[in-house]
Length: 355
Image (tube, rainbow, N blue to C red):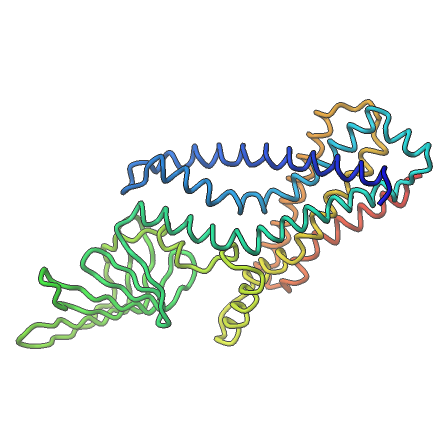
């Protein structure tokens, strides 16, 4: 790596760390304001909010990295263009592709940091954040076993075998205890749907009442059950892509496929995770045409605006393509890589036209 390449790469890296710091600050400010509305729920207070923000920051860092890389490239290269440094470098026979190479070197460092954070920090931190917040806001406790998830709701113990989607549970067994902690009633529930806080609609109930004298069973078609477990609390027991490393997410997808369960959403998340390094590199790549072809005296503010619009546009495009694929049952691999390949092709076409 020659002196000019190293200089450009270091400038891009310095701009990246400033950009990610600013983006994380705004993200945590908005999250803090949102979490303030939950103060007073259970034992959830200011200290828990600060701890929650610390635990969710790694996930935000990973999610914001592509946008930060784009902003860093535009600002760093744009500043050099405004200061006529790029003109001097090109006069010294530094080609457009050498500038791109320098940006890619910086991108490799960003990619390595992003992979380490996403694979080794985000999963544990995300689970800890959800668990801490849910346990602080709810009296219910949760443990996981080979037979599903066990939840405690007051004197009731609930075994959940199946998750059918957000707000929908299947194959529940509820054990109701009396004041002496003796089994009073146990019920098998085919399906439970979240209605509102402290209320679930249950269907297909087989209840068995136990006493010292007799055992009485009955069938109930439908019943509103006053579970104090909220949908937010159940989020911690649902397997989310961000709570798994890429390897564990792949194995979990294979497990679900063997059990003939739908995996499209998880597969899309997996391929988005796999293509994330490509996205970061593409974000740096598409900054070059805007710096080289746009007027050199363009302000930094305008370049930041361009980067923001491009970053939001790509994020929305990625989401639309992904959700379209899920709705119409398209191949998750194709939907996962299509946005990145599209932007890469467009950037390559523009760069190839540069002189």
